[in-house]
Amino acid sequence: NAGVTQTPKFRILKIGQSMTLQCAQDMNHNYMYWYRQDPGMGLKLIYYSVGAGITDKGEVPNGYNVSRSTTEDFPLRLELAAPSQTSVYFCASSYGLEGAIGPGELFFGEGSRLTVL
Amino acid sequence: LAKTTQPISMDSYEGQEVNITCSHNNIATNDYITWYQQFPSQGPRFIIQGYKTKVTNEVASLFIPADRKSSTLSLPRVSLSDTAVYYCLVGGLWGGATNKLIFGTGTLLAVQP
Image 1 (cartoon, each protein chain N blue to C red):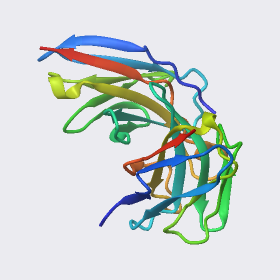
Image 2: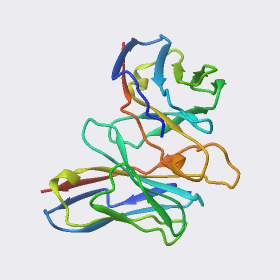
Image 3: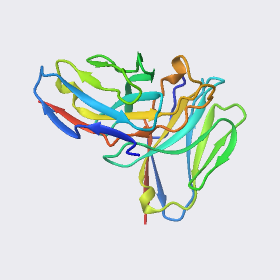
């Protein structure tokens, strides 16, 4: 298993450009998450999904959009990039078995480092 | 949503036991407590998870008092390679707002030789 795969690993955008960060997991996890981490700071939840077709906002959703058309993929769309979106973006997934009562272990990707100039 | 509070940083020496405490005063009945470790330029890595009392695995122990308003991660005999940021995360049952697994600010543990 590859686990959680994020692409691209690095990207430089100009202000106003748009792009999509890709995230794929091969562990058949129901739950997927997008976090951003600014230099020297903690992780902030952007969006999360509890299954295909279901997404919800996290702490800092403005300027981002997500979709979840399949169990495996959870892309993050940045529209009209701004310098404030310069950050490292982490995708994560976890089990969501029916009847489970704990959040289980979050499996993280290696991150996508985005710079907006 | 339970908010967590941790010390910003801690120092230790190799071979010592380190205890990092997390406060979560408004933890919900269905919330679990999970700890993660993060090295620079990497995603966080799961350490341990618990609901109440004590949980132990091969790398750490987690102590949770009866009122569950705090928790303590215990790392036995730390080494230089344990220098990292440690996050306490509170969340629980699937369904509803508890799925928002929100990280706190983390504790930077610096282990000295």
